[in-house]
Length: 336
Image (cartoon, rainbow, N blue to C red; front, side, top):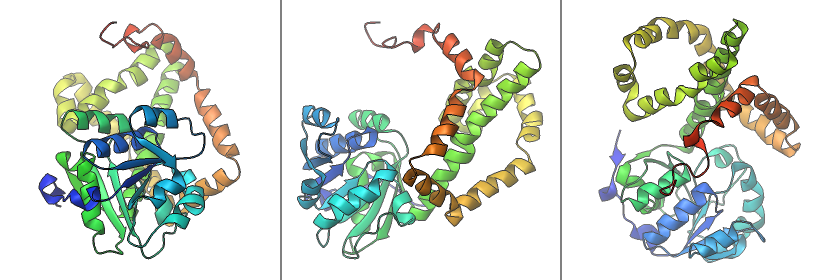
């Protein structure tokens, strides 16, 4: 595997013409400001009366309609939520694309599953920072960067890869290392990680642990501390140094319990369920379900979310966190 660095990028491949950043949320703001600070001419494309327009203008960026931003740029980065792409592309981007333009995404979902179908005469690329927008911006301001994945879906000009690497460099990605992937690989692994491990898997494991302790007669508050509150310590250790650093900093009792009991919880049956989740993603079944859910107004999504947020651990946690001074608004500012 090649890890691409600053030396592999040619920033002029993107800096030579205006860049349109569609959307000004977490990633949109970070990309737009990093691009501007790297010397690019940036136009932020937003819907009429978008609430983020004032913030973009206050940040010193040119703000235009999505149609005008697309019309006046050579690279168009669509950084709005996945389920908005289809309408934005059909209404405002596609009619204003020019031969040789580049369409850039930070996630491959809508292209992979056919919700956006770019014309054959434009490049279609992806640059996906492996961190939230705030981190992408903070690390850039420190002269560093957040690792990126990049991919080429369609190379109309013969320069699509050069443009993707240039863009990754301009937002700080190659400072930390960029890895080439495909739209399929990025999308399927991203969805699997979210569903089986990071969001779905982690929250279900936490709630199941809490339920087990409370059902056995232990105090809800103690169960919260042991199953959710202390999770941050473990995640931080894993994030900073992998399994080895976690083993280094937990007690020998915790380490032995990990080694003998972890495989009893996450076992072959769990792995079989994970493979089922992956199969649903690879077959497109999850994507079809999520697209249809959005088209129906997301009634099942709302019902499932309401049930998740009604779990007893939420009430217990809110009461305990209210007494944690370091978690209160403004607690970590210099003046606090």
